[in-house]
Image (cartoon, rainbow, N blue to C red; front, side, top):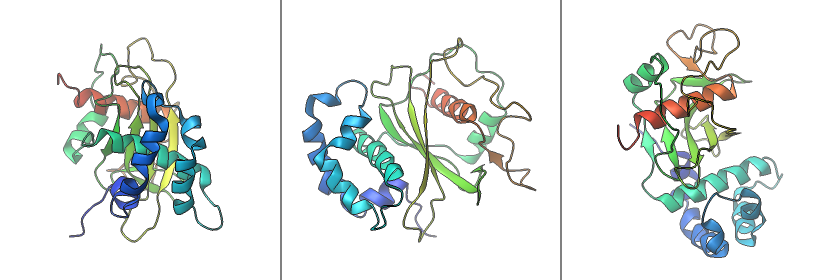
Length: 223
């Protein structure tokens, strides 16, 4: 069976890009790394420009998305082993879970990658693509905000990945997004594919934050 690599491993790890570029970016940022990440400053660094030059095709297509991927991958690299993974039974349980109630949103680490079961969660599009997982970056894990980068269409032989970014707004009164109603019509997390009754889908930003909240709640340090 082919080893399943995360987008970080496939794009930055095995290629050597992380080792070649991320220490220099870290040194260039210096004290600016304390507190919440500053994406605009990150993307303006010359060291980041050198990395972008290796990642961006000659056509220049996808530059903005590549910048987002580099930003999240860098912060994931700084956290080392902060990655998480959900099993299929665990995720199916979280999709149908009763309200989780009182809990203050908190990321399990300042940054990392959360991998989902293969081909279980999909985002509609032309074509629809499966969600491999998501990067998160939150700076201090106690800060009640998070930047999420969904990674779609990760598969062997594909040179890149589709990414969708979401930045959270203020926390709801419950202290997290795990109990919100995220779809105006239909049940949250229902499939977005015709005939895909045993599959699940993400069609709103609220659903993404709801999923992230429930996963972080399940993987909380006191859980």
